[in-house]
Image (cartoon, rainbow, N blue to C red; front, side, top):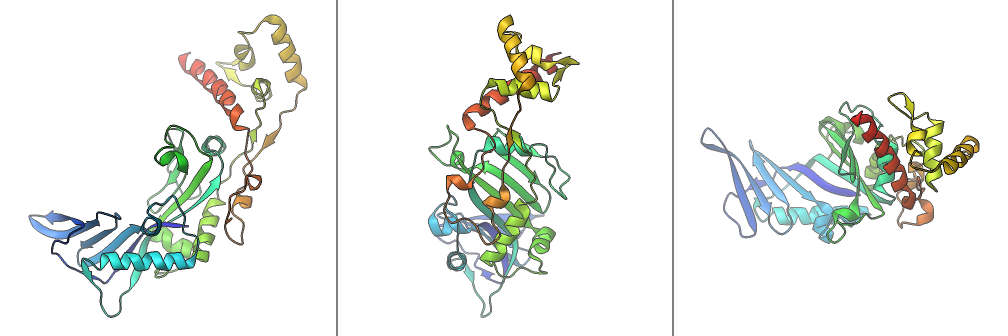
Length: 316
């Protein structure tokens, strides 16, 4: 549930070199104004700047060695934060009454699905209160982001070593909250404790603001011709259907035109409410709990036809 967190603390920094840590100094006009310490084994960082101390780390990486495995309970949250304090204590001194004030919280969950479906269903969606356009990276990630918040969906298996050359069927939905948006979504003036149930409610509320459009089922190439006819696809004012079928023989084109005229194109959508139920996240992934927007084996046909029309339009 919780991935990377950053919190301000009242720990005192030990500026001496400590084995297992890398140190970087920040200077202004020749004077050291801050330092950043990185724990080489876990990647945990401790930053000291203008008298304030900040700790940043990925909680699942501390517990499990990778953020591919999710934190699924309040006990794991407390255990990971205690481990972060233990590691940070190697270069800091804790006062009698230590405190934490979270300034960044990343929330994530993993569901079964295909990133191609999500991109097709959401690439035109404008996330509420985010002015920047939707970004798509390498057909593997779709992202909405602003100064204080970001939400992205990506193929988690493809990110892991050994899976980079093939798509998986596990998607990671991840939101990053900081600044004013962190306080607003958690409804607090200062976030001093992470509660698992509250984090899930915040994540679910953010995810359910997504409005994926229903996508057509593509059982065969005939469905692509149906799309072209039903939506009136055109290339410089010319209907796209004759362009798509021009390489076919005359009799086959006639048969396609007659089939397209009487065919009904079915659709199905992505049910995020089913994947994020109100009483808590699914503990186990089951294929019958996930609604695929189209058969994955036929998605390539749709994309091929779409790119064919787009390339012809741009060339003209």
